[in-house]
Image (cartoon, rainbow, N blue to C red; front, top):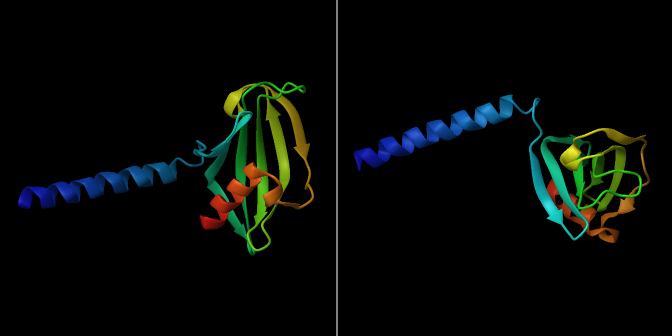
Length: 135
């Protein structure tokens, strides 16, 4: 029983140390958590960028395309805002990259605030909304 107790304590210490390391290194590395995928795209959220703005939430989202689109984008990193009360979403800015997972050359850069769209109209946005609002 004493061995189990000391193992349990040392495991907690290791997990706490790993958590602190992860938190302290968030500024250097994005932690992309896969939220959903379909035949065309895998959609990831960066949990380290989730912020509350009043009753809304914002976060970085990465759309990793299966194939390069007509403009040369293979992935798109977007900063998006979600209204958890009305289930609406909008993109605040987006950058398109030539390679997967937000790497390679910048192909397009869009710094704008799009219109609010109902998340129910887009399965990817709906899954992102469920995720960020539960966070």
